[in-house]
Length: 614
Image 1 (spheres, helix red, strand yellow):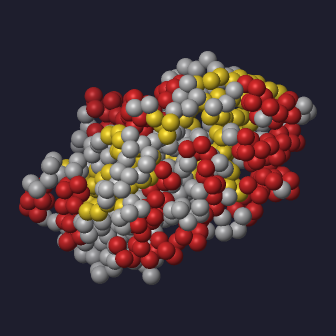
Image 2 (image 1 turned 45 degrees about the vertical axis):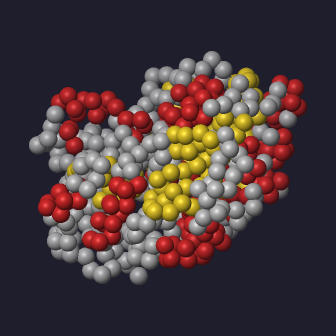
Image 3 (image 1 turned 135 degrees about the vertical axis):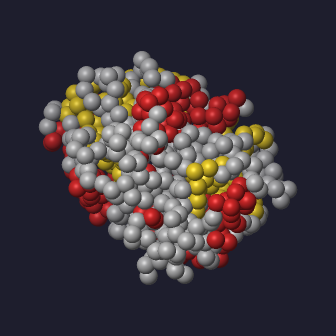
């Protein structure tokens, strides 16, 4: 989810936009800073600066600009073994600066930079463009033509991997030469793990495949007893959802701008949640089998019947720590109608806001038990909304459950109900088309496919256990904590089948099984915001979560929406599962070939996982 841009009709935030209705209302949390002051910066690639060593020590990876970097002849020979030639990777703003300036290309880049599908098609782009830069090396599309274009965190060379053989050869080439490697599909990663300075990128964006099986069989021959949809590492949810609907099934998938989130990589490996996860399960819970190329280039299939330790670790342990996914199989579910509720309330005073949140928090466990799930954005202590879904629901049941909360909300002094609308969608795909892809929705409000990418973004999230909502004292503390948040979103995606799944089923943080909500905050800025301001924003995003973290010591965050400043990320990401994950990591990747920010095994390495620090 990436913070977006203001348009005349919509405010786009996170992976979504909400239609303007006389005031700004948010569907994802954001603290947007649009400072136009230009930061002081040197357009110097970190690996070619004077501080870069001539060659790596035994504790460092080899990066571009060092004497250990492969020669042009080595690259050419390697390229000839692949399905497609290797290529130099450029930052998105490359053609907006001399000496490569091209007016037509630059205009197209500036026009499309905020579009998430466009960004997913660019090998050198992340959805959050701050991960393309370093403080000393950047290539802004907003800068002057004469500004130098620095490579930043954009890898030096990429392999356009479209086969398992391509991935194997790329990893083998990197392994032999101790090169830093990154894996990228769409760039939907809030820690920029698809990019890294001076590295070799394995780009899987065009490695696509969609198949359906009415009765899926594991490669070992056993029947899973369920239908399944199989995806490649480059598929995106917009196409995967359409394919599933064509086969009259639904899969638990990601919700992002224009459906641009990848279906076969980081989203499921990081856990993945959906607006109806209590009905379908989390993304990682639905993975039946996956193919992996291990860090040493070995190809394996992981499932309950083959390499079960890796199967456990890959589902929630985060990609690509245990290998590069080249095929992933999702359990498919029967299509069900969805009863939808859209609710917006304005609060005139802080007390009214806190009372409204107290009322909602008290109601949430019963709503979960009734089968509801969805999102609840809030803003500046003056705005609260619900975007809720109830599989197989109807008006009578809806009024008796969620309607009870809405009636109570109407009775709170200082609360004005702005929107209270319901409708029914025949299936998930209809909801997705109306609320993700269609910019016009006459019912309530909706996510849209507007202009949403291309800003700097920082995130923080925290899992909120059911017991917090059932205790009036802790529920009130949560309400007061959210009062201080300029904008945020709660994602009621726990309970139901998520809670019924054993905490040891996969590598996801055990707190997912006891939590009802994942609350997320975002901060955002543009390319020209001063570094001092960016630092303040990023720290503020993390600090806002402290009251919630204090309620659940040893609690967890959502791996795909992490806080870069979270104390002890190993506990926050995986809890008691981390020791087993680390043991598996050491067994499958003893030379630390595949390390990423906040990944398994990355403790004791620098911020880019290039050199050991301890």
